[in-house]
Amino acid sequence: MNIATYARRNLFRRKGRTILTMVAIALAVLIFSIIRTVIYEWNRGAEEAAQDRLAIRHKVSITMELPYKYIDEVRATPGVTKATWANWFGAKDPKERIPFFAGFAADQNSFFDVMDEMSVDPKVLEEWRNTPNGAILGDLIAKTFEVKPGDDVTIASDIYPGDWKFKVVGIYKPLRKTVDRNSFIFRWDYLNNSDAVPPPMKDKIGWILARIDDAAHSAQIAKSIDAKFEDHDDQTSAMSERAFQLSFMGGFTAILTAFDYASVGILLILMLVLANAIAMSVRERTHEYGVLRAIGFPPAHIVGFIVGESVLIAVIGGLIGVAMTAGLINGVMGPFLEENMSGWFPYFSTPPYVMGLAMVAAIGVGIFAGALPAYRASKLKVTDALRRLD
Image (cartoon, rainbow, N blue to C red; front, side, top):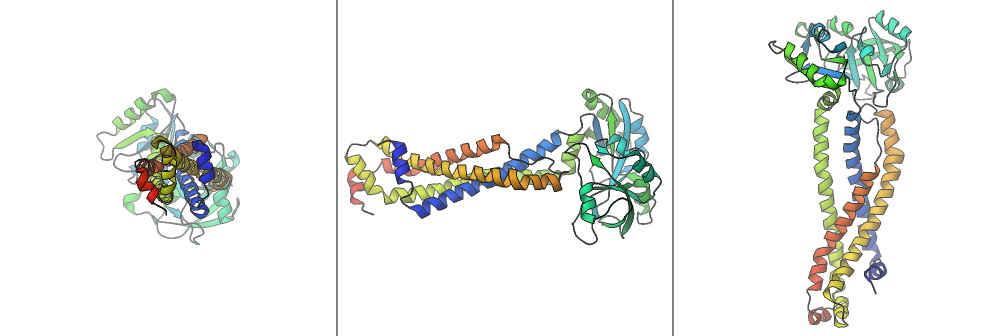
């Protein structure tokens, strides 16, 4: 009798407990895979940011605005080929169909030149420049509001009071998966000239986006931009678009870091669950192990039998969890998030390495969970083990 045969034959002696343990392992593997996928895909989206584009924001915080006149100085910086700006609007739906969405007040003359991954028909751009309250929407947000070009739409803001009425002049077409299809873009001058904007917030811009002629010199160009405003009251922080995206969602990044630690905690909990099940099994079979020792099986075999059974349970539970991951995340959750949250998760599928890591973790948990009960069983005296009949 070898370790594999013993583990297989004894696997379902307590069917209910074994099945529940496998289910717990499968669910833990699924949750672990979801967390790791979220972290992987969040960073993957940021990695695909434009290499030849810089973002310039206030040095203190992204929530603080810059003077409008800064745009001309950025455009005059050597290495900058074109630049634009935008303000965060804090957009939300007055009817609360969606709690908030990406609303931007942008320059109608330069925004889509710099953000060229958003394709807009030249006729639409011309109409936008001639329509003070014109807005260009992503197809998903247009679908949510059930509007099309020519329709009027009203949105609200967490920053600026009142209801804001816009005319939809067009729908932009995303040329890359990283483009957020839920953005609502309208003219900055329409916001700036509104009575809802208090005087201290007039002629202010939220951030600047600049195209550069050579991505290899992005660090030097960023330093040159910051040096221009070093002696100003409002200093700047120029950075790569990737760094800007991560800072823009800094709070979410902190949550992902917490998730990273949580994934380790899940593995520890899983180990305790499996260790408890194996320990109960060992106690029930103490007499059996005593018989095996009495007929000549050495302690190492006892350890192998127990650890082998623990690993087998972990492997089966892990395989079930991986199958659930492939079906739920890659088959259901991923396509939904890519379609409806493309700005945050343009890609969302569990990569093979995460599934492999989950299986390795499950096997490791099986080994460690069975190690202590196996060690204790191997140290039992034969006479003491034979006295145990329960």
